[in-house]
Length: 205
Length: 205
DNA sequence: ATTGAATGCGAGCAAAGATTCGCATTACTG
DNA sequence: CAGTAATGCGAATCTTTGCTCGCATTCAAT
Image 1 (spheres, rainbow over the protein chains, first blue to last red):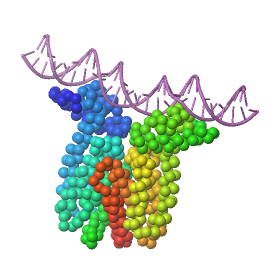
Image 2 (image 1 turned 90 degrees about the vertical axis):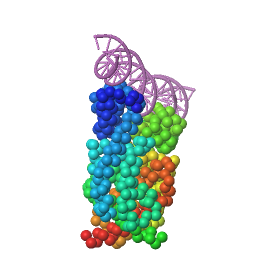
Image 3 (image 1 turned 60 degrees about the vertical axis):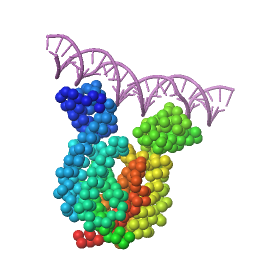
Image 4 (image 1 turned 135 degrees about the horizontal axis):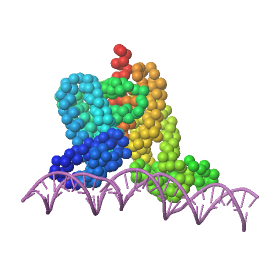
């Protein structure tokens, strides 16, 4: 950020710009969200944009920071009600939440997630992944006695990415003949079965 | 394609261009593979490129067609040796194959898969997905008596995308502390557990 | 060898989009 | 109400990249 805003109006502008970046991306897609689009949506000129952000990338970065906080808030809100149920219910609830999350803000998060690799250095799915990781860790801690996972890191990586990426892919198919709840059910079943099996098999090893 | 090549040299050039497209993408990434890069790599001028391809998109399309054939060949080769084993072994073998496939040609396939959403209209992961789908279908047919899946379409969608996307994501993390075989093992376990569970639960429903 | 078609070339055009820069406007201070 | 700093503007510039066009070279048939 070039200048640190000292007057009210400029702080407002910074906010407006970040928000406009989100709208521009949701509207035109990441690839076609230009600085001009953003400036227009923010009701501001390009010049002013560069007064407060070094580059388009910096603007994106700022947006992602904001989204990161939002996500953290959302997770904190819902987490308690989820952790006490059995695996299948927890997973089901969690997936529904993630589903809703992805469609929030006119699909902004979905659009960002789809293009995860381009944003690459600037985490996106990584962000979601990290939060999911934390949720899973909490769940496992609370139900410690039920689970004996030998390689929790790999297991969580697989579980989280399988679900997230499958959801992203499902939501990106414009006209799938599969219904949302079919997907959620299958994923829930899969994870439940997997976690169940983790309790049984490794006891022998 | 603008002209259909009538002399030997031009046919060679078409080949060289398609191949160069692949190398350019593997080398610079999809986003930075320009027509100039491609022409240089092919040892040919941009002008000649446009003599045979209407646009950069057409060139990509041609590349994808070629890769599609390659993939089909690969699958046909390996499929017989895989289908007779139990679920866990089959899955394990299949995953190893896909893993190797993704790293082939200096990561060309991986790079394409990562950017699946941009290539979107021109299938990429879709292609892989379709082949996997076919393999799964064959497996299920051959082991028909063992499986009763009520919603095979959704189940296969989840299975295939979970594995493919997780692999892609794993391979795209530059320095993961997870080993390749840990990922394969976890995925194999998960799928095996899931398919196992499909035989048990739905019998009651 | 000649000639016309096929092929090959690469500087240069055009569009898109990021970034800058000089000037205009607004807010704060004394 | 100056005077100065902060803020805002948007046309102009720079860069990238897909693509064209006129000219040069090679091929193949007579």
